[in-house]
Image (cartoon, rainbow, N blue to C red; front, side, top):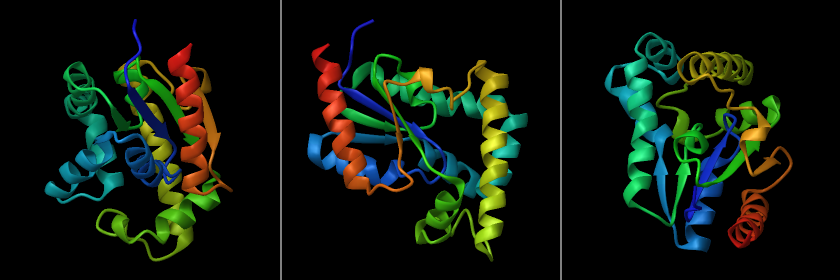
Length: 186
């Protein structure tokens, strides 16, 4: 299997995928393909917050497959882009596969203070945000295992794993670019 000029950027909730992908887009002059935006939009259209939609999709696996297959289809005819998706590495195995980790307390703080998340994750307290994120993490892990027989947090699936808890998005992007360039030369 050949390499493509595609970086699949997966990771934990609020690990920085969105911010890092924007930096990579600018630095590499790449496009971005975001599964999460599509997922949230579908949930919103159905009048559900993101966690409720996760539970709904569990009972409607055709929706999950449709979302994940969309990235693979896009990659067949496109190059020079970033896949911002939990299973981008699985959908496009010839990509440079990145996994971003983050401590749950930092993740909850980031999500709670992110105004863009308020339409799909509107919580009264930071603790409520944290509990919801833990629930979503578990729901996603179970769903992906049941549907695809994979564990997204299995670090052996990736070319690089970065803990973003105490890093800026710029620092993370720099590491990714450096490692991506090495990967291309291998």
